[in-house]
Image (cartoon, rainbow, N blue to C red; front, top):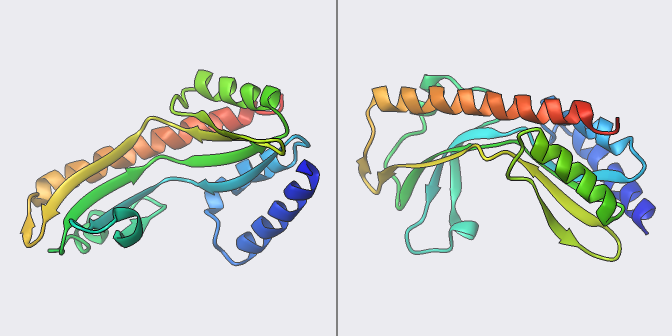
Length: 188
């Protein structure tokens, strides 16, 4: 069952890569993990910086929308161009890289998790356990969700937006370094 799921999932991943839907920078990590017989990746993101509109009185999971989202390191002008009045809340976001990995069993999941935590990826955890697989989430503690506006009011000036962007880029770079150092150790 595990091997069949892995084969099916990797076919979908290869299609997504061919269509340019996978962050290029994370592909070497995906390839390494997916080459190991007891693991396969189910989702991933190299991390991102963005400006998001979150509604006040609607379910944010369903009705939030990105006004700008970058998986690279955006310029101040790129970010500034997305700051505008909204109907709800305007949020500056920096999300850490994240990987979801299916493991053949708990023992193999524990190996990945221990390695991640000892590599500085301290928000990593086991997300689910079933008869067919164990899902491990690999994640750092680096995250920023900063409210920068509400409705017609924008609460930040250019100086603070520059600081927030520069700080986020530093944190995102550090998070990526931790992920790549962890990936070097996997499978040794």
